[in-house]
Image (tube, rainbow over all chains, first blue to last red; front, side, top):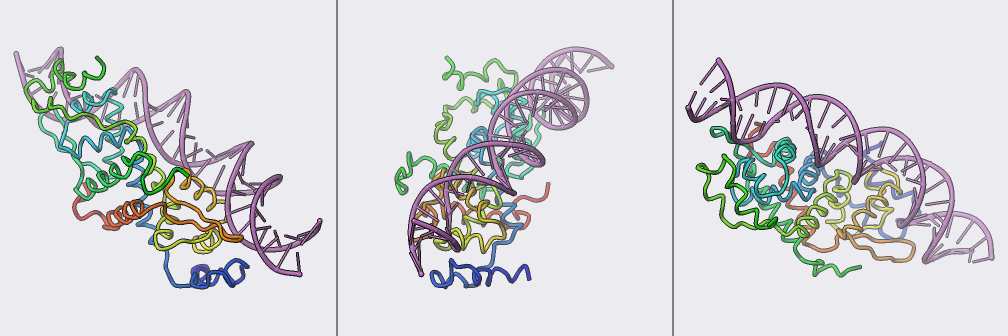
Length: 131
Length: 131
DNA sequence: AAGACACTTGACAGTTTCATCAACTGTCGT
DNA sequence: ACGACAGTTGATGAAACTGTCAAGTGTCTT
């Protein structure tokens, strides 16, 4: 009753009676789980400081001290961000002696970042005029 | 002084003295503005409800009522989410009679979403084993 | 075994985000 | 011009997120 509502919900609405009939086509919702997981990835990337971090790691593996040196922030702050990125499995770690090296978890992530930055770079988005 | 710190910051740290010399290569930080803008886009996509919305709009243009019918949520809630997405210029609107039709702002956004969902679909990410 | 370096973690405070509801605007039919 | 439908907006409170700092763990050197 709840699930079948999608196809018929519009029937008792004034809105779609005459105006957009093709709206009743199946078009199932995306799997909730996939959406949640994807959203979690995007959310993790949706912060300027973390994105900087990811962008650096996209170039090559780095240890926390080096990351701290490049970004102007204290080490615990960087570490906390990395912790979050690791929790979402965007980065993975490798210990070598005293250092812990971080890198992007896979190159699918790398392409996501590259893709996003490319879009963000278009000063005011050539495709979408400023309102 | 502050900006040139990047190349030399590691010099007075024990860490990189002997261990990763190549760390001193130029590698400038990403433009802060680009990072901020990109992060804002990601953040906007970083919510399951909004992502659902975007995924629907990726298929075709829809009015608010139709979106409300497909997702099981009340209209003001949907509208608020759309407002945010519009503020970040991920979607654009077109009025036709009583209806306001939403669509993705450009197909760069569409590919970002598609890309992300593809990554999120990989059940537990075949490339990155569960820790 | 002790000290130093490289991190990580836990906890608290300040901020941000999000859903919800009531009130408001805009458009159409009569 | 009135009522109904379609949608937006502002305010409010609860929940989630982030930075910061003190204290902890792990590894190397001597």
